[in-house]
Amino acid sequence: MSAPVTVRVPAKVNVQLAVGAARPDGFHDLANVFLAVGLYDEVTAAPADTLTITCSGPDAARVPLDSTNLAARAARALAERYGIEPAVRLHIAKDIPVAGGMAGGSADGAAALVACDALWGTGASRDELLAICAELGSDVPFSLVGGAALGLGRGEKLTPVEVGGTFHWVFAVADGGLSTPAVYGEFDRLTAGTEVPEPTASPALLAALRSGDAGALAGALSNDLQPAALSLRPALAATLAAGTEAGAWAALVSGSGPTTAFLVPDDAAGQKVADALTASGTCRDARVAVSPAPGARVERF
Ligand SMILES: C[C@@](CO)(OP(=O)(O)O)[C@H](O)COP(=O)(O)OP(=O)(O)OC[C@H]1O[C@@H](n2ccc(N)nc2=O)[C@H](O)[C@@H]1O
Ligand SMILES: Nc1ncnc2c1ncn2[C@@H]1O[C@H](COP(=O)(O)OP(=O)(O)O)[C@@H](O)[C@H]1O
Image (cartoon, rainbow, N blue to C red; front, side, top):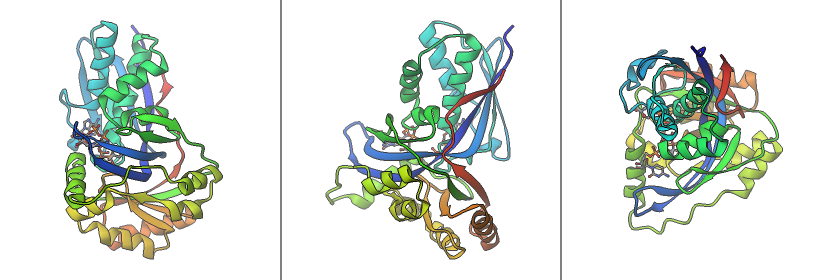
C-alpha cells in the first residue's frame, strides 16, 4: 500500500485586481496579478476504501466537509480523468483564513490534485493538472504554480511574473467571510451605468515586482473589488486605517476580502503593525508573512 503524501500550498494576495464588465457567462474578465504569500495549508492524501475528508485548524468548523470541498472535487476530477476510483482519505491542515480573499479553498484544490497525482502515480503532465485546476475554479491554477503571475480571462490564463526581491506583509483576518460572488455582484451594482474599462496589467506594478522595490510596489497596489468589499463590510475601513497609522506603506483589501493586506518595509515593522492591528480591536487576528512563496509542492511521503 502507498505511503501518505503531504503537499504544502500557499495563500495569495492580489497586488493588482483590475476587473472588467460582467461577461455573458457571469464571470468578469480580469487582469489579476497574483502574489503567493507564506501562509500555508497542508493537504495529506492517504489510501482508503472511499473518498473521505477531514480538516483541522482554528477555522476548521467553517470548511465544508461534503462533496463541495475543493480538495474532494479535485480528487474526483483527477480520478475521473484517469478512469480510477477516487479512493482516498484527504486531510486538510488549515492555516489560511477561510472565505478571506486569500484563495484557501483553491489552495486545497491544487494541493489535493498534486497529492493524489503522487499517491496514485497518475503521472499527469503539468498542463493536464493546470487544465483540471481551471475547471475547479478561476484561482486554482495559480495555487499550483505559486510565485507571482498575471491571470487573464477569468484569472485562469497565467503568465509568470518575475519577482526580484522579498516583500513583507501583515494580514488582518476579519470576523466571518465575504462571498466572492456577492462581492462581484456588488461591483456590478456599483459600476452599473458606467463604462467599465478593459482590465490591463499596470506596467508600474510589474516593474516594481521585477525590481523587488517595496516602496514602488506600495504606490502601485490596486484592487477594483475594494469599493465593493467596503460597501458590503464598511468596518474594513477602520482596519485599513489602523494598519496605515501604525506605519504600513500601503493597505488594501485582499481580493474579494474581508482579509486586509498591509505592505511593510521589513520584519520589525511587520511585527509593530501586527501588534497595533490586534490592539485596535478592528480585526480577529493579524498574521505576518513574506512573499513570494512556491506553489503546491510535495513535502513528504
Ligand atoms: C476574487 C478572486 C481574486 O483572485 O479571488 P478571492 O479573493 O475570492 O479569493 C477571484 O477572482 C475569485 O476566484 P475563485 O474564487 O476561484 O472564483 P470561481 O470559483 O471561479 O467563481 C466563483 C464566482 O465568482 C465570480 N467570478 C469569479 C471570477 C471572475 N473572474 N469573475 C467572477 O465574476 C462569479 O460569480 C463566479 O460564479
Ligand atoms: N477546502 C476548502 N477550504 C475552504 N473553503 C472551502 C474549501 N472547499 C470549499 N470551500 C468553500 O469556499 C468558500 C470560499 O473559501 P476560500 O477559498 O477560503 O475563500 P476565498 O474564495 O475568499 O479566497 C468557503 O466559504 C467554502 O464554502
